[in-house]
Image (cartoon, rainbow, N blue to C red; front, side):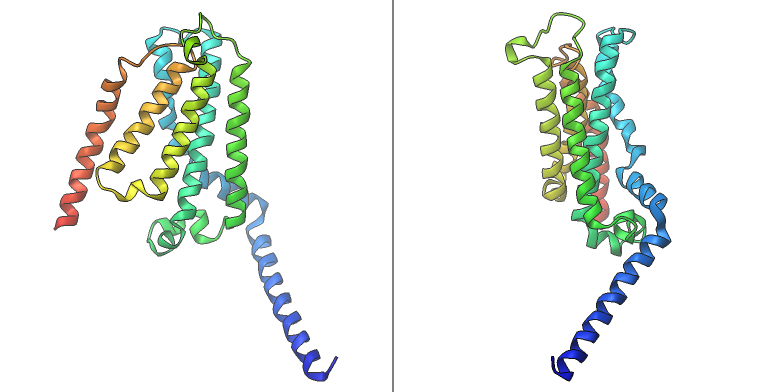
Length: 235
């Protein structure tokens, strides 16, 4: 090795060492507890209240105090909590550069660096696997009454399809549909309707006739908000 090559090698080693030390010091500064808090914050547990709409079916089917139905609905609730959290993190990954420039969103764990991108990707995978595992668990919990969806593959299969539909719809929303005014409102409303539908299907109760009413209920406030936003933009 020539003197020039040796100097270049030492310079490269020094650069790599400084980068490694910087990363290690950042990890040590934040600590594992800080990373865990960043993960939980990115999952946005405050938004899980939206998933309480899965229990609407229990109320209308008058099965709120049925242990089996409540158990199935509760597992379904957790499934949608994990699913929605995976979508939130995925959306934050897509909007990362924009969020870093935003006065408020820049404080989010991904935007401020508390949660590394590689960690976020792994967490999304874990959350999706959790959804799949809990959905399979529902298959092992019996339905209280006769499965009225047997001709369509059964309540369990329909619930699984509803979860997949929700995830696909929200991914499309994050990637493309949220940029289309008014259509984004319909997609958000559809997310709520899918939750209600999933809550009804998982306990074997038919709510399809009432879904248009629920859709209108969640859609009207969204349209009002979108109209206000359009007015502000026009000014």
